[in-house]
Length: 231
Image (cartoon, rainbow, N blue to C red; front, side, top):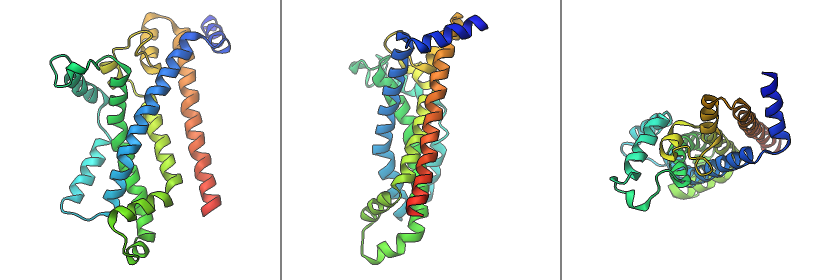
């Protein structure tokens, strides 16, 4: 164990090429997925919070249910869609970083939309009457409330990033864990542990923990700043 720890900290201290490459791919995939999730989830969640239409309750319930989508099921569905016999097989996206971005985006978008809906609904309870008195339509009220809750929505984005970067099931299915191409921190930790290369697995685990702690710390600081600045 002591030798493993020595090798682990040596990899980190010398900025081991494998650790850096795997960590960078993980960050790139997760940030791209969260970007897509924000572009889709924030407007959808804000609209659900302010709009009234038949079946809205069912849509909200379905959205909340999608927050708990099993990652391996998402990976399996995307695998079938992207495989050679699937409808998108001709694009050759299976076992590529693009497929992993798609998998994480599918998981992140419902989470972002559901959290956004709740944040906007809470804000709308305080400001909605005032905005409606100005004659604003539902989309314009949603935009105004998105701006008003921007700090809380950044926290939502950080939460989605934390989930995306620690995900393993879906990216393993659609990415294939190919060395130097689709190997992320979570899939590499699993593989290297099975292979017995514990120093690489532990180094990646420490990097992953550091990123998650940093993200949560940033979220806490942002919440504190918002409370101090805006009450």
